[in-house]
Image: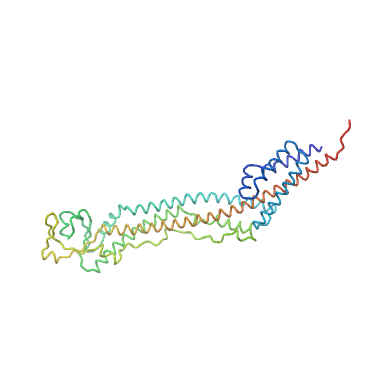
Length: 384
């Protein structure tokens, strides 16, 4: 009878304690400083002895080890400043943290992939504006649609001297401002800048909206709120576990203020110049001007320099967005790291509580096993 009872109790005990001696569980306990490396090895040795030759002395040794480990785990909990959980609380909290933990792992992976996609997309836009190919075509279209006295010309060997330009300007495009009124000239150039600003803003908005859809972590607060609620529920008397610095706003790059491409007044001398036609001599090495040519004034706007101004402004805009995105990613990474520390802290607590729960159950069975060995010892040996 007692042999049968001992066998049944061993069948209850071993499944409880064997996981404690598993390599994975031991590594988790040791890595988190919950136990010393010697303790799991000692438990592993005692369990092997119990399986081979179950004796009361081995049971007593396991009881002592379980009591010692339970006391040490309680001390660790006290150091962490955390109250004990009931069995029901431990079950509910463990299940809840497992669900949130899976969400966290998924979100961390998504955040890494989405942030890389966002930064790559912005870097591509910056590169695109560093080497523009369509700006001049856009500017030419804008100029051709401008009302008033504007003329777009491409410089060739037949007109460069008539416009007062050097021979090395061949192939470049210039806008001829036929009005001499400075205020009217300013309005014309400003209008070109405003029209380009409108086209740029439409394109940039589409680009940034796509990026906003690609990178959603900053606006996805469900996981953070779940963590906050769970942390508050499980650590209500220990507010140091709760991070209150969550950003609940959704960052939208598409809402960024768009740049104004209209040239500033200080840029005017570099863009618009007053020139005088001349007669080239010796392949343009010398310039000969008649009295009439000296009195003739031609205001020219360099399309190349205007496009360079637009390119630089657009590049600065996207570079600023890229810098903001990098800061956002850094902020999100920091928050993810803080959340990871919270998970680590709670996982240590749950490991301690789960191990204590296992040891408590094991001690109940060990007590029954002790009694079974004691009864066996007390029984008189049958005579032949």
